[in-house]
Length: 387
Image (cartoon, rainbow, N blue to C red; front, side, top):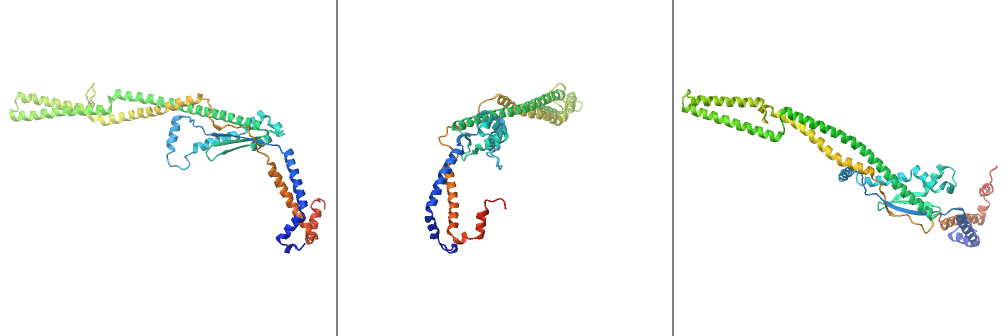
């Protein structure tokens, strides 16, 4: 053969053709041995798949409606956060140590894995369970096991326990919400009772029963009385110009006008006794205090009106124990094994063997490389460990 620095592409082809019998023997031998080795040494694994979607059931309808309205606000990251959070919860529950240990004990996987340590068995099982979110926003659970039936059984067991865990978490959450709402309900109810009693006491002490209608009534009453006083004063002026000042008619009317004026001034100062007509001077302060009491009653009433449906809903949710998972595809018996791909592995091993054989042939064919001291040292000492 020519010097390697002067070799052409055809020289390498010639070398392969020359040693084709060796290449063929090694290829067939490696292919058969590797395939049989994989067949007998690597256990088969079957994969079962289940597909679920996030539940449409929402706890605490009032709060859910509020959050749904908030979803229309252009806040980054708010839209779709509920679905993502629910799927994250699925992953957390499935990958939890309690779930994995329950599966191991249920199906006696420690013996199957030949792992006396529970920690190592958990790690091995975790590799056999894969979850992912699909492009259609569904949630897939893939389980690999030694038999197709076992893969289906483990997947069904995961779905069952996942549903039970979510139900228990929802019940616990509803219980905590119910306790919080119950405490708040009692607090607001007590504050409302205090505000109502305070308003009643103020109404009794001030005489201010209803600010809008009563104020209008009082103003109308004062207007009417002042109109009568003004009418009497005009009438007195006319009589004084018509009759003498000592006339009995004028004197009587003068006394009557003074009484009207005196009564009007007294009413402006202290109001009408045992009457809904209050003192005109006290109206602004009493109206302001009435509005404050009335406002407190209205605020606590509105809060109570908002809390009562939530409180009742929380009590209902606490008692609800129904399936929450929406299973689109239940796990089915797989028709073909998922692992190992024997043909692919055997082909890769064979290809690697042919590459090594090719370099071996290359060394044999090239005299310069064959007599190279460094290559000779490598070939002689590659398997030696003692100098």
